[in-house]
Every structure is written in C-alpha cells, then in structure tokens.
Amino acid sequence: MVPLDKLDQITRRFGFLEAKLSAGAAAPEIAALSREYSELKPVVEEIAAYRQALSDLDEAETMLADPEMRLLAEEEIPALKARIPAMEDRLRIALLPKDAADGRPAIIEIRPGTGGEEAALFAGDLLRMYQRYAESQGWSFELLELAETELGGVKEAMARIVGEGVFARLKFESGVHRVQRVPETEAGGRIHTSAATVAVLPEAEEVEIDIPGTDIRIDTMRSSGAGGQHVNTTDSAVRITHIPTGIVVTSSEKSQHQNRANAMAVLRARLYDLERSKIDDARAADRKSQVGSGDRSERIRTYNFPQGRLTDHRINLTLHQLDSVLGGELDEVVEALRAAGLQERMHAEDPE
Image (tube, rainbow, N blue to C red):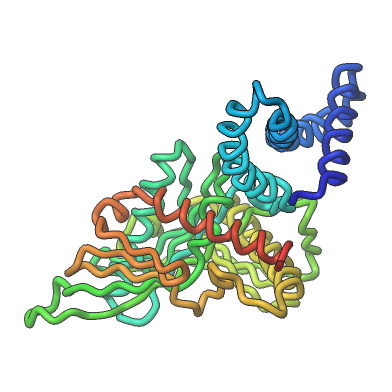
C-alpha cells in the first residue's frame, strides 16, 4: 500500500506550485517552479488515477449489500483489484527520488582493452553504435577526441552527446564490453575474445564543479597519431592535469582554445562523476545494484558475432539481433536496463 499521507503532501505541493505560477511568480523563481511543476504533474496524475480506483473499489464493495446492484459489483470488484497493484507499482516508481543527473548531456569515453588491434577495431564499432543511436534519438553527437590506429581502429574516443534524457538512457553503458569474433586478420578462422571499456559521465556545470587554477597544470603539445582527421601539425593539443586527483585529460582538435574548453568540460565531468560515485558508494555500501556498479572493470556485455548474439550479463538479457544493435537499435537493451534499475531502487527504498 502506498502511504496516503505522502500522496497528500505531493498533491498539496502541486496545488501550491500551480497557484504560485498562476499568480505570476517573480522572475528568478519561474524557471525552478516551472521545472518542479512539470516533474510533479505526471506524479499527481498517477495519484489521481490511483485514488479514483480505490474510491471505485470502496463503492463497488458497498454495492454488494444492494440486491439490485450486487451482480454489477461482483463484476467490477475483481477487475479493480487486478488493476490496483499495477497502479501502486507505477506510483512507487514515480515517487522514487530522481537522479539529478538524468536530464544532463553526457560525455562518453571509449578505449580498447585486452585484444590488441582487434580490441581497437571493436572500440570503433562501439563508437559508431552510440553515434547511430544518438542520431536515432534526435540527439547531437560531437566528437571531442579521436585517436585512430593504422587499420582504422580506435585508440581513444571521447564524445559529447546532448539531448533529452541522454544520461538517463546511457548511464548503464559504463563498463567492459566483450566481443567474440573471427578477426579479419586471422587466417585460421579462430574466434578471438577482446574487449573495450566504456565510461558514460554526466556533464557538469562550471558552477557545480569549481576548479581553482592552482589545482591544474596545462601543457600544450604537438598533435600526433596514425592518420585520422584529427591529426595536425601545430602545437594545438592540450593536456590538463588535475593535481589533487592525478586525473589527466587531453584534447587534440585543431583549435587550441577549443581544446582547452573541451578538456575542461571532460575534467569537470570526471570530477563530478567522482563525487557522485562517493555518494553512491556510501549509500549502497551494504548492497550491490542489480544492474552493476558501473565499475569500469566490470564485464557487462558480450557481443558474439558467430551466433549473432548480444548478452547483457547484469540482467540476463540475450538478443539474437547483433547487427541491428550495432546499427544503433539499442532501445530494447536500454529499456530493459532502466526497468531493472527502477526495480532495484524500489527494492532498496522498500525492502519488504
């Protein structure tokens, strides 16, 4: 049973916001009040539907005492009792504390792991997969850094993805992605296993992550690499070292000014992610999340080319549509992971 006093508090708060906005709130307040109003509106609609169902059930049970209405009541009661638990589940999900980062843009980092050139080629496959997925969602996808191998693999890639609900949909992609396939360079036709790591970080605002100039060291250097459109001959590449944490960020686009801005954005995202991780670790010290910790060392998914199979090990999801997924059709995987994440959070909030 959802606590009715909590529902009353939310309904009252929504009424207050509605009245405040209708009366014409002061300019500095409008944005914050409008955002809260928009977030609460679907919750209040769920509350209204739930309360109506409870009221209908009470009314139907009262009708049992009336011989003329008894048959109608006996038809309605089972249907209402069947609907109410699902409504309660939707309400519990709606009442879960929101992840403040869910609506943010994301910075995605992809690097090859074990497997040499084959791992670098797979990292390139993942980069294209996320780019195609972003395009299918109507998001913008901006490469911040791309270092390629001679055979077209990826040594390191960073991109900024902007759009509605980006981090909410991509945050479960962090971890080790494993591939099993026959490399093009393998004459014997043997299946090789290699891996790439993916990190998805919510972008941080400058006002949230203040980085004093005394905490960073900025070096400029000549861009270098094997081919690729991001290699040039000027001293434009920028490397920023965050002295307190030892985090190092590089950017090697053609504009030194843009490189500095890109590198600072990535550094803020990494520091913001570090702070979020500390809070999450403290909150979840006594349990392990169903969808994984997001630890970069955790193997989360296998892409098996000979079988055309994708398996997400955190939720035991297997799809035999590998080509489609690598082509950017990630919705089924993303939605399954989000559902598992919500279920785990519901369990954590209400372990009984």
